[in-house]
Image (cartoon, rainbow, N blue to C red; front, side, top):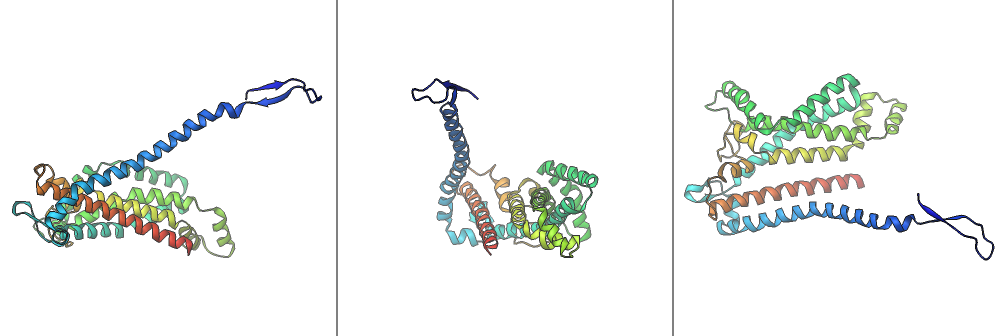
Length: 310
């Protein structure tokens, strides 16, 4: 730390008192770093605003031309005849995401509890490695494995013409969301203060009772965040779902070939003419998907906040 000494004063004050100049030297650096941090934060906000504005500008004209009721509640999607109704596709996305969450969340949460509170370190390390590998597998590989193994198995078991169904999509999605749920939930569980668990054990509760009645409720905010990430991964997946869902705009049925919002965009954007109603309708699907995810996030954040205040 740099400073300079001050000479003797007229009134006889002490000689050699340090006079620090740190504040004057640090101020420009602090201003620069604060500006840099602010800029990085604003970049994220700017990206969200740009994407939102672009989707509204690109997607709203088609909704107005087709008609909001016809677009959102129409059950026929045939570009060749000019029918652009996405009600069946919306229901399919909701059903597929809900099914994946119903399967993936319990498995992911139990695995996180096992890793954080039950497993010995050696076994936990092995499971951690498997989870990390699962997170690193590309979406197309999930789809390829599902298409080669899962789809034929469903066709044989249920005696169907094709095994590319909503059930296959749900199973694939439930596996794909596991790494996000496990990692975030485990972090939340490990962050719970040890004193909470010690107090529960001191009152006579068993280890498992403490985990489910004390640790898990205390970590519910982090677990809810894990569920939000899982929902975002499930509803936003396209490549793997194209390969196992059948890609047909039917009303959702567990053993029926279906089309999701994401797969509708991915499968038709390549041949939709620029400036055509068909292409604009695909942007409208993207707008609906964006709003759907935003509503889910807002709902869960409000729910978590109310739980905390309660």
